[in-house]
Amino acid sequence: MTWRATVLTLFPEMFPGPLGVSLAGRALAGGLWALEVRDIRNSATDRHRSVDDTPAGGGPGMVLRADVLARAIDAAEVSPDRPRLLMSPRGRPLTQSRVAELAGGTGPLIVCGRFEGVDQRVIEARGLEEVSIGDYVLSGGELPAMTLIDACVRLLPGVMGKAKSGADESFSHGLLEYPQYTRPQEFEGRPVPDVLLSGDHARVDAWRQAEAEALTRARRPDLWAARSRQIPPKSKTGG
Image (tube, rainbow, N blue to C red; front, side, top):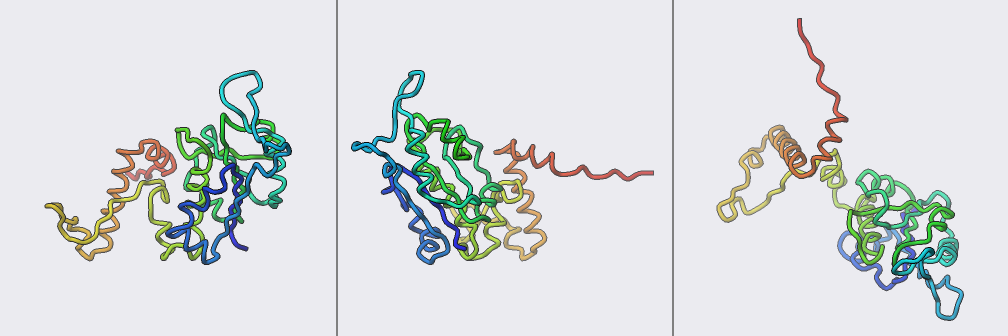
């Protein structure tokens, strides 16, 4: 079964956008995955195609209505085994492990929020899992949805040239990726590290591991701390 992303949005013209080029675009054209984009406004019932209203209790902005969004979700007719996601800055952070889980399934339904947010009742009634791509706020959920989809698509079988490319990169083993080098051998007085030109694969692997650990300790102490908790301490031997 082809992995499919079903996107509910107020701006369907934004898609496929970046998903139509490069790896994701070639895979989409080749049938390795499918994209279904649905306009939430098609589920509005008044002549103005209204989808939002003022917040209960007062406050600025507008809120996406529960009844309209519920009809849009129901009209998509996604099977129960497909995750239902809502891109939201208050959601749980998207991680590489969650991406791998989503890529291993049949593909999610993704709701792109707008305005001040989505009526809480439809989140609960339709079992939406709120997902965040970072601690910042965007104008809507479309760009986060594209980010999530791209992260998943690149892990699908046949999308990347080498399967190892998806296994040997940042976050795959709880570490940031080691530095990469290529030709020319020297650039503005900066040479490629000798160890990478040695032909000694064991030394190269050890160097890359050490560099990945050093980068992670310096830039992502949260990842390093989590990794340290998972690694069992070495047993002591003595007389």
